[in-house]
Image (cartoon, rainbow, N blue to C red; front, top):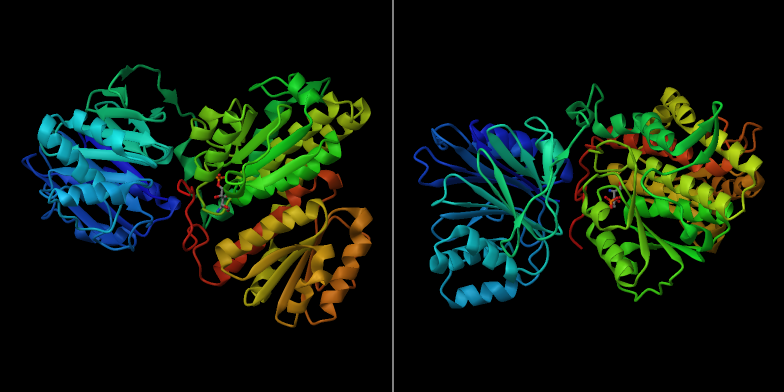
Length: 619
Ligand code: M6R
């Protein structure tokens, strides 16, 4: 998704903008651009380039950008194309005809065609194919009559349908930067003699830890020494900034070749951080689960159904959650991808517990599902990794995954910590509904406490997976199979491999093989079975024999130590001993590592897979 940065302060602005854009590269982009006030503060210089940031940097030489000697002011953008192909022309910033009003935008202006026709009829000439350009012309249109840039921006915002995070500069106002947001994320960083805007926290952390997460339809005006917040109706807003307490180093690679590998390795810590504050201990023994964020009221006891909605990896976490709630709390669960849920006129009941899961807390479809559920009167619980995200602010209750910033586009530590939160909810619900007796409950708590250590043990044995990847990275068809919890893990394992290796990979419930997919199996096929449920080992082993006899190479990722898969599998990855019903939090890790190593073997950049964005803030 697009990334926005903006700066007003005493430092030379161009390096600040480029530096900020680099911190947002993980969001995915296909072109980039900046706009800064020139030497005499009377003109705004725009430079844009298709492709990587280095191409933009090549266009920014001291000769072309001579910065102001006083206040340094500028905006920058990385674009992820929606309207119009990736090109220099379509890259942001966009301007009005004279170049006096300059805009960067993240989101989609849904009514841009109508606005464009209106402006064209008035003689305005458009240069790009983007929806964003209409914003610059519209601001100019209102500025001509009001001669007040703030009013002109507000008038424009009132006419935009869809989503936006915006940064706006005006030639006549060389002392300020105007920002606004609806749906798409935008933060304001409050520095000392400098203030910034950005799509995400890592872009401002070098300058400040105090930020405003702009609310829906809020507008910010930034000067060097202060920031004013307003509603879109122009009313002043006063509130305390949020202090970010995580470190910039946690958003950097720290010696690993890629963020993805670093984040896979961070899972033991992320799982501990997510689990520890929620376990109650008595005499050194875990006896209960509590969430500081909210109470388990009667609605949890009396609920008749749990409904879970999310996208991508978060949706797969929801599928594992379904098995966990049904097993431990004996409550029916429905899981749906948010983009389907929102359009199928879903049936929501008063006694439903509605859970949305989103790493970023900004996914457009997940947000739409959340709003739909709230409008239907459901109580919404959000599981998210991003404090201050839109999901966290709009849900009734928030449970944070304490995974730390996840930079790689492919989600790893956010997924396993989402699972941790879901397991904790399911276990607690099982206890309060009387489905789990004290002994059983405490036994499970003791087991869950060991999960981070088990995750660590897998990291220490990754060489075997790396070797297997080095032998299999050229396979043309890969299938993950599993049953029950493991069929959910298969979905996520297949997605991970697709995302970063670009190998064709699918997941099937093992029992479905015979109903069609087995027709695809031949000697170019790799079948990976996930097997953590002892009572189903035998059935799964016969599925593997079926594919092996048709020429497939086979691997099992299993808890089994008795050799159930020795005959049927070419390679067996044995997981550390753990309670099978909790194993989903660790059985996915070898699959994450396999995806990572296949990606590297194939010469891909696992951190920035092609065509993907970290945070999907448009439909
Ligand atoms: O930020 P969210 O968890 O809402 O994102 C949902 C999906 O876009 C995300 O999980 C996506 O599938 C990732 N690329 C998975 O690695």
